Image (cartoon, rainbow, N blue to C red):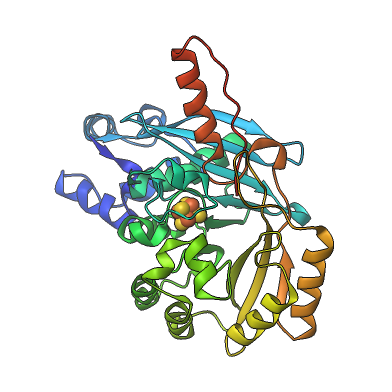
Length: 362
Ligand code: SF4
């Protein structure tokens, strides 16, 4: 059975034609799936019976399911999805200011990149998500939250996994999400966040999809960045900057540099000065993120005063800078946390209900 959410409108139309049906039926099916949020082929009442039979025999619309959710008092919700091969991955629904919604999606089950501050990295890498498993995160959450089809939402590929390590499926998902007859989420509203795999930034740029780019920088010198993100050994800061300079972005947009502030490590004004120099020639903005310590973590959360002083310095030097809104702090909203908790609870049940507490990382 093929996952229907992995198919572009055109690919679905071609499959239908090859099977002897009219191509326009693909638009009707897309409308049911993505506009009316109906996944049961039998309920698609403008389709002929023989087409419904073909759809039931050929496609599945249940390649992944929401199996757990955690609600935050600020309205954010973290969802745990379960795949047919019994793996799990997360997505987060974030309620932003002014009634805006952002969905943070996973691109892989686990991650190979191995950042030292990240809980997902600790679980190792299982496999890439398919385009359908990525797309379904959006559809399932929109449906669950009752978000009307025409409400604009933003997508960030910032959940579990390194999206550029799964470029083929992620680009396929981006295009499916952007289909005007489907979810119609413009590529300009979709942001790929990467740990900085330089050659794949180049590859993504060459595809000219119109997506936004975010770089997880987190340090201004290679020594510290390698300690935090071992991938820096392969692609250092300068290699990333060289690719960002070439990356095609909308005139009105900027490349986002994510900067995880860790107490005493990268939160001083000396780092802020270096950051200004580093990003001097780029159309960039900086997003400062508080590090949230977890049990056993060697890193600490910086003070609000230090965060503010860092931000003020960048702003004075003409570098756009925001401090990331802390969303879902009461629901382990950072990447890998709900999955880790679910796995832990499952293991605990199997081991005489011995309770383990895991505190959540980044
Ligand atoms: S922070 Fe992102 S890139 Fe780094 S290990 Fe975690 S999931 Fe992978």
